[in-house]
Image 1 (spheres, rainbow, N blue to C red):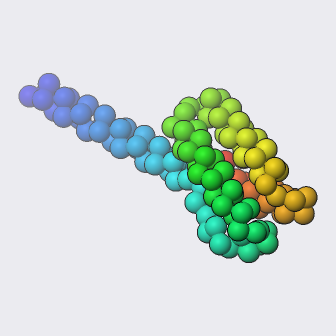
Image 2 (image 1 turned 180 degrees about the vertical axis):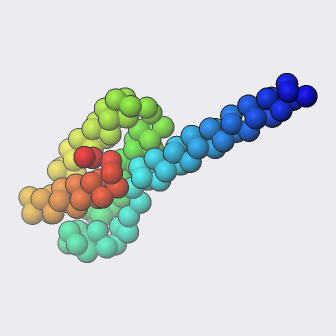
Length: 119
């Protein structure tokens, strides 16, 4: 009888630990999901149609890289986030003019800090 109770308690604790780990992974994944309203960003940056199309393509790539970073652990996650952000900024620098780029960097930094991705 003691073995059955002990086994049941052990299974319950393992299930609880697994559930908590899944919640943490989901919370991290949602923080790294960088969805945005492209028309609002386009209006804020005063983008042309060509710039908006290019921005959407760059953002798709950035979103994929951030989703990959969300699945990584520890320092590997930090490295993947840094690489994704730098790559995004490099591409956006080639698309935007100086004033647009300055405003975009401000918006991106604010978003990353508010989501707890950068500290």
